[in-house]
Every structure is written in structure tokens, then in C-alpha cells.
Image 1 (tube, helix red, strand yellow):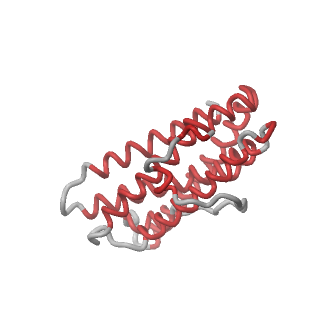
Image 2: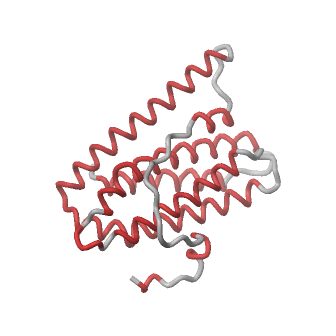
Image 3: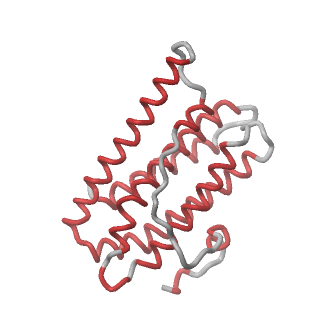
Amino acid sequence: MNAIELLKKDHQEVSGLFEEYEGTGEGAASRKEELFGKIKSELDVHAAIEEEIFYPAAKQAPKGETKDLVLEAFEEHKEIKTLLGELEAMDAEDERFDAKMTLLKEDVEHHVEEEEGELFPKVQKALGRDRLEDLGRQMESRQQSLAGGREQAEAAEAEEVGGGAPSPRRRVRRAAVPRSSARASGRTRSSRSRGRGRSRSRR
């Protein structure tokens, strides 16, 4: 699986989790926390492999065609991480939780739209099949490493509390992965404002 195929697969999985969340009814706080935990875990790992491996490679594409798109993607990641942190600090019974989850979903959908519609085609053309295959192998290995570390942390926590599975909220906190040391600069705009009414024809 090449790098772009892997990232698109992740996008589909997260989209499915958001759909599950939207299908929860009133009074389903524990289920909402569980789904938020899964969404956060997926996004944490996904962001890590993009920031550590995919974006640096994409940014170095010839002629600088992808540089601005990569910088913008870093900024969108920051905004998504901020929302994830706010949600992690809230209880699913909070009346604001659903509204904030909707904002998270909109930001993620906008980010996916820009990546799949603008960044990925340029990267595919610039890097070629062999390079994307190599990146895909690196990203898949890193993804498995991050997921494995999370599972080990959860198992250790379960033993500490007497053999039971960690709560959904605890799973969320254990899911966090180290953020990339890369720092984007340049255009910093609200992804929500970009996602509403912005023309895509500017590039």
C-alpha cells in the first residue's frame, strides 16, 4: 500500500467513526466517550505519520508546488489538535460536547477534502510510484509501532487497576502520541472559515 492509499484508508476509517457517533442517541454518554476515544486515537496516529514522514517528503517535491499546501496542512492539524484537547477535558454529558464534536468533524472533513483534492494529486505526480511505495512502508511501520505502544500502555493500566479494561476516558489520554517537531509558518487561517464558501479555484 503506497503512502496516499494508506492515508485515504485512514480517512475512511475516521469518517466511519464520525458516522457512528452521529448515530448515538440521547443519554449515550458512555458510547460517545468510547467513540471519541477511538476517533482521537486514529487522528493522533494519523497526524503523527503525516507530520513525521509524509509532509516532509511532500514539502521537498520539485518546483515547490506542494510547499504551501503542506504548511497549510500543518496549521489545520494544530487546530484539530486544539479541539481534541478541549473535548478530552470535557465530559460527554456536557451539553457542549456534541456541538464541539460537530466542529471537529467539519474541520477534519475540510482537511481531508483539501488533502485528497489538492495535495495528494500534486504529491503523486511529483514523487512517483516507487517513492510513494517506500513512504507507504515507512508510514505503515510507524503506524503499527504507535498503535502497539498504545495497546501496551492500556494493558499496563488495566493491570494497575486490578485487571479490568481501562475506561474510555482513560483510553483517550493514553492514546496521545508525540507531536512532530516540525513547525509550520506562513498562512494561519481558521479551517472552519476556509471550509465555508471558499473557492477552490485559487490554486
